[in-house]
Amino acid sequence: METAWLDFERPLVELERKIEDLRAFATQENLEFTDELKKLEAKAERLRSEIYSELTAWQRVQLARHPRRPYLLDYIPLLFTEFLELHGDRTFAEDAAIVGGMARFEGRPVIIMGHQKGRNTKENIHRNFGMPHPEGYRKALRLMRLGEKFGAPIITFVDTPGAYPGIGAEERGQSEAIAKNLLVMSRLKVPILVFVVGEGGSGGALAIAIGDRVLMLENSVYSVISPEGCAAILWKDRAKAPESAQALRVSAQEIYSLGVIDRVVPEPLGGAHRDPKGMAETLRVEIREHLALLSRIPTDELLEERLQKYLKMGRFLEPNA
Image 1 (cartoon, rainbow, N blue to C red):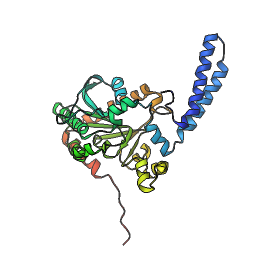
Image 2 (spheres, helix red, strand yellow):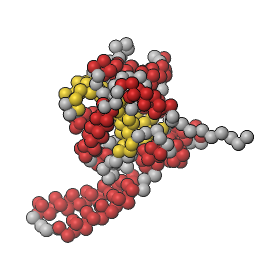
Image 3 (cartoon, rainbow, N blue to C red):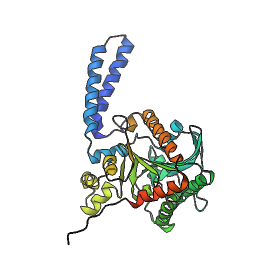
């Protein structure tokens, strides 16, 4: 993971390493470098602010895919207790691209689920790079119905480039599995809280993202297609991905301005990967607040509000007569 840094991060990472090396040398040799360290730390703070305060759409896509970014299995031990992972869709197979099960959040039973990527080649092959097959979505559906049966709120973590587009997945009903999840989630009689924590890719994300509250981390992205896929279609050139990312308006801030999500969750300066524990604590506050609010809403009102939330999305213009 030493090389797992983005190009625009490298100047900052190199400076931070110099600071750590100088601090270690000063401690080892019992020398005083307080003034030099303060100057370097001030320089690092300025550089950190310069790099991360003016990110382009493509840089946010890169941060959303950062190899050090926390995944669902990183957040679970930081946020939940008594997690019991459940496997299989009871129809065809287990899909490791979707992780889910029962847990407790501050003592309250909940159902948690989400996409899971790998940290290395072996893990990514096992997790199919976070791209679920239809059995993954059917497993998620089974867990959601379990939550409804026991009155447990559902919390989902979205982080996928999209549903797996392979022939086998299509033969086993990928589109039907996604569509059924959309239908069932719209009618579940328990609160649903959704966090887009990395990539929110098309129907692969939406299949577990129909919720009463949908929140996006500051450096996550949400789009109907990946920038590379869009560039390949429009320009026949995947190298145009930075331009397509800008045109797609994939960032959390722009998605919020379009009314697709309910809140942008701030990340530690530099991204969630720089302080996973701090990011988890921010999520803890959000989960606590929104579960408390949603739990006070009568079921009939909850379902009606959820329905209206999605019915009023979308804008259109009528041409002049």
